[in-house]
Length: 360
Ligand code: GLA
Image 1 (cartoon, helix red, strand yellow):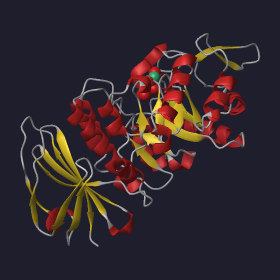
Image 2 (tube, rainbow, N blue to C red; image 1 turned 90 degrees about the horizontal axis):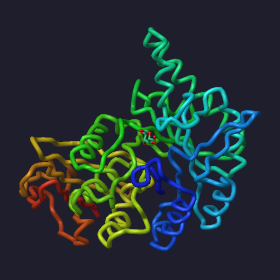
Image 3 (cartoon, rainbow, N blue to C red; image 1 turned 180 degrees about the vertical axis):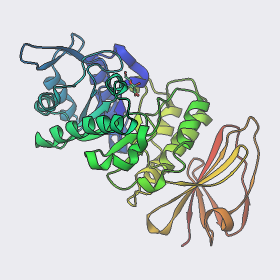
Image 4 (cartoon, protein in one colour; image 1 turned 135 degrees about the horizontal axis):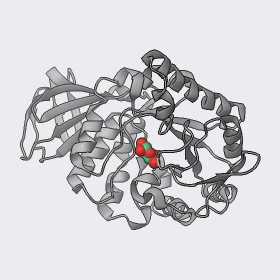
């Protein structure tokens, strides 16, 4: 869990923005809620010197000092690069400099690397055989994984190659702890919901230390309604997704804070079993996801992606939890009593009901 600069600041991010984000993680209580990584995404890079050593650009005067500042707040420092010659924003990538860059990151105190395919796709295009093309990519990711390990510093390795070639199959082998499963999220309900739902078949690839990543959060960026952001947070929590906030933390509304810091929802995401939810039911615009939690509990999400509010009947015993149990609604902060059978709860348009069912 943490924060990443891209969704809000994009290519204009500065050292000052990152420091403000670190300060805000502490002052808002987000750090204590679990958001500890402060990740600088694309566009921090400057030029390489005569020895090939990468330097930041003028917006980032001193990366080691920035890392020290982040660490002084009890937070971790994340950075971004590409296996290609250039990043997606056409800044300097790590191709042919993997070991050197990994050493530089370690010297700056980096704790996390997002490694984004970007222009490596041009290198791949030159190879006509699809299997060899995949091998080129896997080799490139393997190379940086090995370079990070060789630094001796624990650096969480996050793959970003949009889910090509079943990355969930080979991600763990290259040393990755998480891998993006799709192309980029947008601050729009439809795009967010498609991305989350595209992980419906991937539950078995998630486990402690190995996470499917449906991309960073858009909560607080302003283009979805509160109800839609609750849906976003609920779906990501059920998916056991990495929770990387992507908003301006210095300008959060009370609703943004409440959504990002709901303790029960975070606990669903971070549950010790590390299970990803399964979509157990889908009819038209109504779907139900269940996630097995520790202590024999189950998280159940009821999603309504239609344009109208409705109260679908859910046969708990049949589609969610065999013997039912005590039901707690984590957004309403309300106990709904014991239920074993059919349940009918209103779910708003584009909304969600997120429940924890405890058989005890
Ligand atoms: C790609 C990634 C994004 C972001 C940008 C930066 O699009 O998927 O998450 O890192 O590159 O250029």
